[in-house]
Length: 343
Ligand SMILES: Nc1nc2c(ncn2[C@@H]2O[C@H](COP(=O)(O)OP(=O)(O)OP(=O)(O)O)[C@@H](O)[C@H]2O)c(=O)[nH]1
Image (cartoon, rainbow, N blue to C red; front, side, top):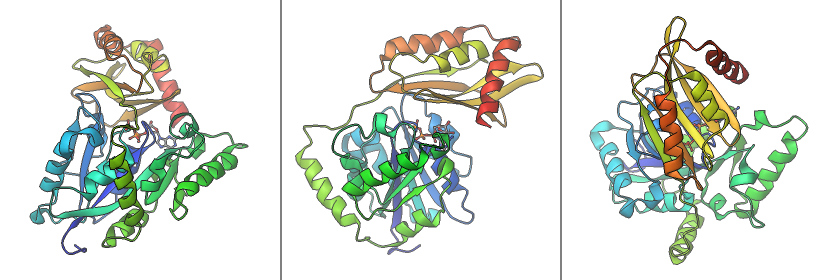
């Protein structure tokens, strides 16, 4: 381990559904690296921890809020302390912040962590090329969050219309550069970047580009009263039984009011036994993928800055309660159609 024995902590930030878990799973596939993971998710159920592809023995999961708003970094410091123990000999710790977390606050939490054996290793801001200008960058001035990044990864360019792709990507680059002229910006489908981009940053002891962050953090402290991000709200349900594909697809296609993001893992009864699926909605995009095994217990989480949690909970409960013991041919066909679209 380099860096005087302190383990670099690399933060993955980005708006709800931008592609942080996809990037994390990609980085975890790096052969030979010993990586620790902290996942911060919404709701009482930690879907992201369940979706982190089995490469880590113990993903420290922090659920029930956004990491930058936890009092005194509570959960984060504990998780970092646990993962930075010398006997684990980790090369780096990756922290996936919740989609509502403010990157500047995340940088501060890591920079001033009470865990002794860690040091900041960079902050990767994931940008959803499709939704970015409707969600994160909506005002005249580019958002301050760009300045906290040591690397910007733009995802979902594949979903942009061919004749708009270059214009949108150029606009993202131009907006980011106005806040942070030197930051590297890469485009990557499903976050499949060259891992050296992330782990190189982590190899530098006290990289020079931490300096602007120190200033940002001070400014941020001064503005603490004007908390500058919406607290997303969440509703979740645990699924002990298989779900009805029709009820599920109806939910994905018409999410509860204010649910910008829906995600979960489910079991459905097919003609040849039970099958597992992971479902994702980001804005108006629905994504369905098969799981290798049906999850013993599934879950669904709805998240959004303007979500009404009790109304959303009723919709989720209705999906959990819909009868689903027999194969539902029409519903399964709709589910498969999404799988084909996303293949
Ligand atoms: N087409 C396409 N889909 C992507 C890409 N990156 C991510 N996705 C999909 O976008 C959805 C959200 O991705 P996640 O990686 O779960 O996003 P996230 O930022 O971890 O989401 P939260 O933690 O809930 O905020 C999933 O369905 C991904 O498969 C991409 O580059 N192209």
